[in-house]
Image 1 (cartoon, rainbow over the protein chains, first blue to last red):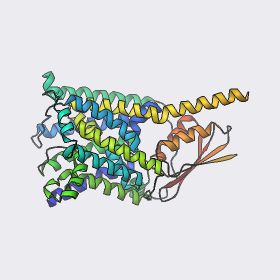
Image 2 (image 1 turned 90 degrees about the horizontal axis):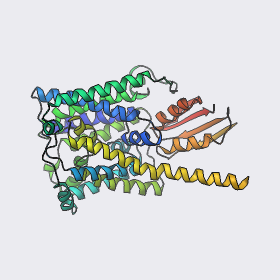
Image 3 (image 1 turned 45 degrees about the vertical axis):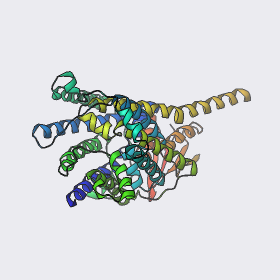
Image 4 (image 1 turned 30 degrees about the horizontal axis):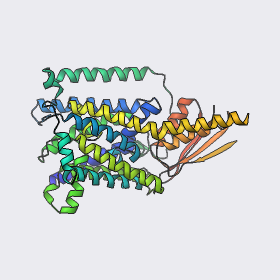
Length: 356
Length: 74
């Protein structure tokens, strides 16, 4: 119990700290691929996946941890991930992003988080459980890409790592723009930890290493999985209303750790402040949280559980979920950012014509 | 000439979306001062300015989770 509390909190705090300092935002990353034609954060995610994949499969090979890919509930994964992708745009961050922004004092993220926890609990142990179960019952028996194809998993890891290396080389060849930075007010370790801008690829490397660390720490407490956000978030609410201590697990302490780690990072960097959104943003955040909780519960994972972990484990669920959550993000971005902008431009052009 | 854009309280990507719009309205050489409190914008605003070829003449944290950046239009 004490070990679970300690290692879970530490692992979560590391993740929260790194994500806050590195501004690691997957929602923004997926969105910017479409609205800003900027793939940088997506590439960062691929780096984190590659690092984790190599690390975790090495641990499996050494017999340190166990992993079973399970079945592939394909309809639930496709539909759920798409809905999740829409939800994160309205919530202003994915599940993890919302946890760490809550630690920065953004009350809009607290609101999104409440909606997310509520809907996840409704889907996982509440009135929508039968719906969730029936959609998830449509499945393929094999989730592992290696088992389906009959090829060793290391071939897929090698191909993927090669792709990531090629991307990195291409990125390095691009003409460098110097990003203006703030004049440093601190020195030494304080500057590096609480002030300096972290390169997204460096942050990704750290996220990948924390994701590896999560596996043995979690499995030591009997929870046979790596990083996960949705089920633990639902577990918090389930525990709070039932008082049943058996619900508490490593993942619960992990997500609480993310919140604490981000708070520590933000506070020490003078980036913590309670910020209240206006009523409209507050409602959008709540709806986003509800949508995100519905989608992630159906898909069996969020941008971390499926997008970062199940991808690294080379499962169909991970990669297909990642594809559809990106498509969901793009669909919502079209309606939230692209279309209003086009309309505004149209109005201005019409006015100019009238004035002329 | 200097124009101020106050996007305090707005979360990403709105500070950037608004900055891109407003900079269209000012002339070359004029400055746009953006006041913001979205942490992620400390990454996205200077990156946008640099990539679009504008000059950043000032960029500092003015308080707890509050920043200001001045972009001179190219």
